[in-house]
Length: 171
Image 1: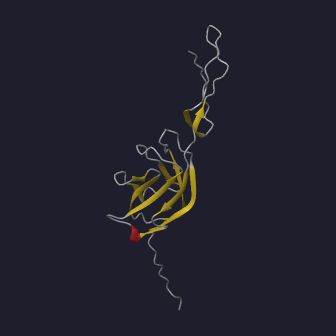
Image 2 (image 1 turned 90 degrees about the vertical axis):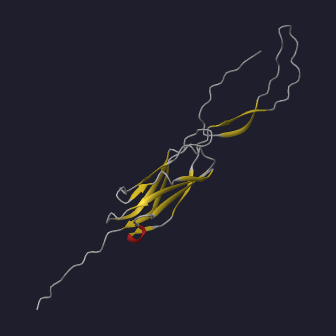
Image 3 (image 1 turned 135 degrees about the vertical axis):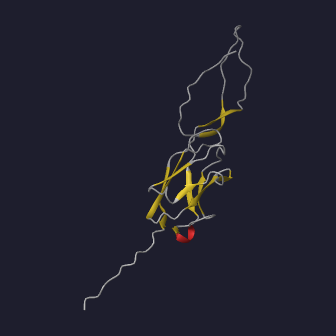
C-alpha cells in the first residue's frame, strides 16, 4: 500500500477527469507491478462562479410603480449551477433603502443558475439616476464563492413629485 499526499491550490479551474498513472512500482520481493490502466479517479473544481448578467423588471421606477403589491425584480444569471440554499447579496450604488426593501419571502431561485431578488417599492419622493447593481456572496453547487460582479447604470428611480413655482408678473 502506498499513499501520496498533495497540497491543492485554488487555481480557479474545473477539471472533471483527473487520471493518475502508476508505473515502475515493485513489491517487497522486487516483482514488477501488474499493468495499470488509468481511469478517471476524481475531479477538481475550484472555479469560482460568476454572475454573467443582470436584468431588472423596470428600468425607471416612478410613482406608478409604488404601493401595496407593487414589486421590482432584479434577476441574476450565473455561469453555472448554484447552491440554492445560499442567496447572493445584491447591493446598489446609491442609497435606495427608502424606496426598495428586499422581500425575502418572494425572492427565489428561478432555476439552478438564475436568482430573482424581489423588492417591495415605496414612494420616497426621491430621484436616483443610473443605479448600479453589485452581486456578491453566491456559492456554486460545490461551495466555491462567486466572484464579485458589478453592472453599471441598470435602473433609475424618480418618485419625486414636481414642484409648482408661482411667479408674480411685474406690471
